[in-house]
Image (cartoon, rainbow, N blue to C red):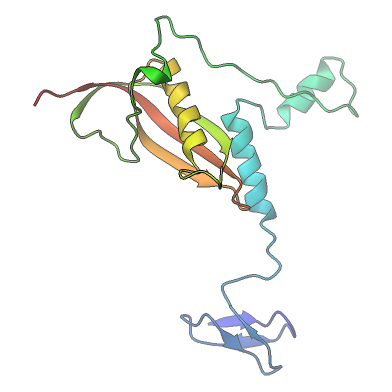
Length: 180
């Protein structure tokens, strides 16, 4: 394998499993870490996911629609925030039951009767709490319950590069406890 030395830019041959490579110029470097990587692409992706989780438009289309509607091109469009659909039945509150959450595709001991539209949210992490993700899980559970869910499957979460926020998503389900 060949990697470029970050100091002298010379190509250095090494085994593909080496995490530290020594260059003739005297510098040592990890060939798998790009020193110029500032996580800008990852941060932009995280912001886009967070905006999606909050129901905001993220494409260039809002700017074109804003200009077409008579808005000034120099004035940025205001992102449209869509509210969650209102359930046609009385939704349970979060306090009515303990959350039934899993990263898996099934809930052992429960029968899944219906899958609902996926939900997502973003939340600040609380490093001083025993469970730093609790606010995010609670917010996701509240969204699921508002849609009529009694559980969430296929949960996923992604931490921000700086470790201060989390984006969570999952598929709400209507489930009942199996007898036994």
